[in-house]
Length: 163
Image (cartoon, rainbow, N blue to C red):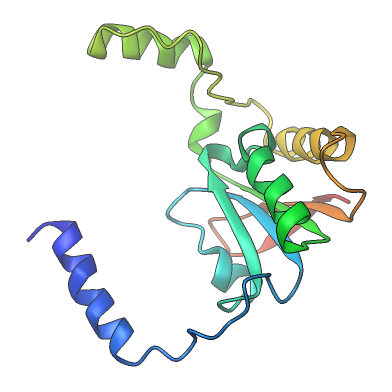
């Protein structure tokens, strides 16, 4: 069975007892969480979130540049007034460079990806500080609290890096 078929079966079970269809559109806790897409990071469980609590924006590395569009929409149209950034230990973004992935794409797909910034990083805590700084300095982002964490995939703990 394909994973999609498994998802369809799981969703039928979920929907059969679903009771949260009346949650309001804006997130109740007025927070946007920017996190890495890594499958080991369950942002809702790690941060104690329920459906309707927060906007959770995920991308490779939890990078702010990639998420700016979503953060602006979250603030301007849906009222979020705080941002939390969560990067994590053992992140794949620490394992390559733009040149390396571009070379791989050229070799394996015969395509040029020079126009894409893949946004890898060499220092985990600095990547959090850089993303906090980028959002704080962006004229498109409101002056709101922005806190950056590193999630430890080994322990499940978050460690504050920047506020």
